[in-house]
Length: 107
Image (cartoon, rainbow, N blue to C red; front, side, top):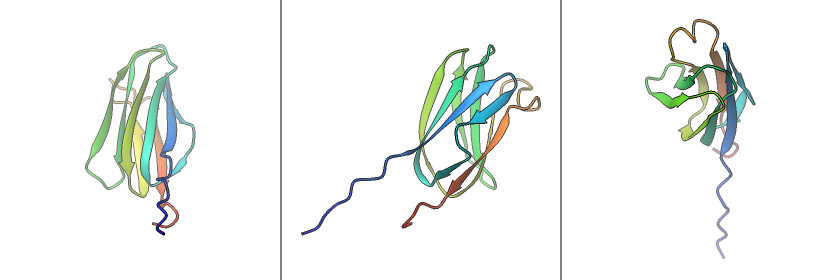
């Protein structure tokens, strides 16, 4: 008899945007499918960009007005990822963070 194990649930991380910071609900997640949620708790509109250090692909979230939440489901490989708000000078004013993605057990 062959038993098929269910796929593990996706990793989740919430990115809270405020003037002028990004705060992650966790600093490290496991590689694989991940749900990254942008929650704008600030007064101004914010967006989110994510890029693996050394990588070329940039993932983007739409602009989230105050109080809005935007989710994206991604497939992330192990590495360090930069996150930032790309609106005006928000990144320069401190809206940046780092996320570490570690190898999942058994991979």
